[in-house]
Image 1: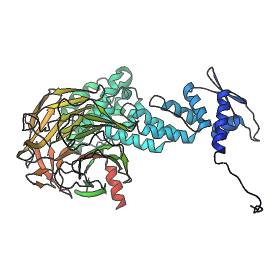
Image 2: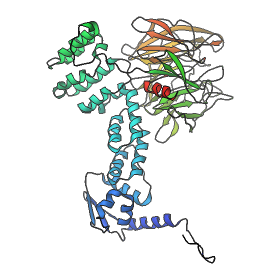
Image 3: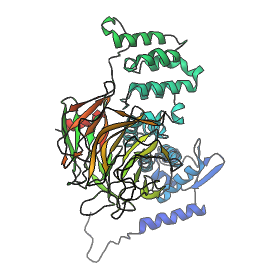
Image 4: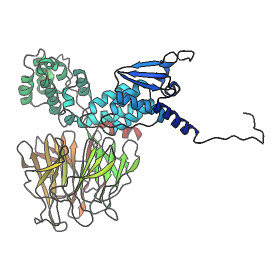
Length: 576
């Protein structure tokens, strides 16, 4: 470029582009100087070719031939939503659009056709924040259709972790047999193969005359030898009555289970098994400094590895896992906090989220889908019964229906899409031993109910759902200082609304973490008297017996266990 004479200058108006587009948009609103009509159903949208062709490659190709002269003045389109189409056209002028849970798929359909890549990406990002059990199957297909890799990865991870709940939705009942087969080939994280069979039985029974024919192909995708004999001889056999080839599959499964050496030829590899889950345990301590490091169990080496350092060391904070994000909530360092952080466990990146309405320590938290609930705890002056809800769409905390009883140091778990808050303690309670009672929160109605109380009062406990039942481990009785430690474990059966004892833990203690590793319940850490534990124990349901696993790297009290795909471990090992 030639140098300008000294008596020249270049003037650039920083507002020129935006002002010009604003004026062009006003011309669009006034329907002036338009030269193209987009026709959808009975609706005509008058637009300016220079705008839509610059933004949309699809519309550009519709308008111009190879030499760049206008070849069409009318663009007919079909099978789109009128409102979404108008919003997308306005987006071409303004670069701004609003969509919601109800409209995002319609907007995405228009954006995909018009090849508005930035809008497609925005829709997919929004959808990734609102994944739940009722939409994840549709979102999975959408991600594949529009090439939304990030959305697809997040949806698949959600499906792997929540298959049992997904199989209970109406949307699951309406999927095609091909879609169900693709799901069954996934590395689904389930507590037992019974959950896989139950989902197939539910799907087939929804339209038995037309779906029963698919049973042979579906049963081949279930690890039938992992099912109990009474189930194979009972429900499986009954479901398969009159279906060709099904009896042979059942016989083959029983042979693999009891006499694998007698198998000569089989077109099914019953040796296959779903990759079981490994375990992450998280920071948390009531009386000592919080632990910021996350550990993961390597079942191949029977050892614990450091997974990452969250750099969050608040005492007695709550943790929940939502997709790949670990959410740290509240807790205490030099004061009681309402702080909330999100740690991406793939990248280690930490961001601050909006704070709780009040500071809480000793509260409990649970996630259903991407929605997080926090209950009770101490706010610095008293134990509260208030509850808060995180809305992933608005990205705000708001109060929801309070508990019947204020409590802290309680257990929490999710069973059948309801949240159970169990036991706990309140300094104003008449019963200084803690609570036996249990409250159940229904997220759909935002109402509480009670169920049968435990046999023993207990606080600073952990609760876990496994194989359709709730288990509660150890805890304290009496007050915070002069307390009796428990080694008992109780199991809740929802069908009978009753609690029963199983085998005691090997050591009395409170503040243990509990979860599921493979096909076993596990407990980690906790405290007895004035010392913290590194110990790990697993429980065999068949033997009603506890046994030891290798200890964790850090002493832990009031920490958290989350079940995750073994691919997380593979990713960690690949970086070492």
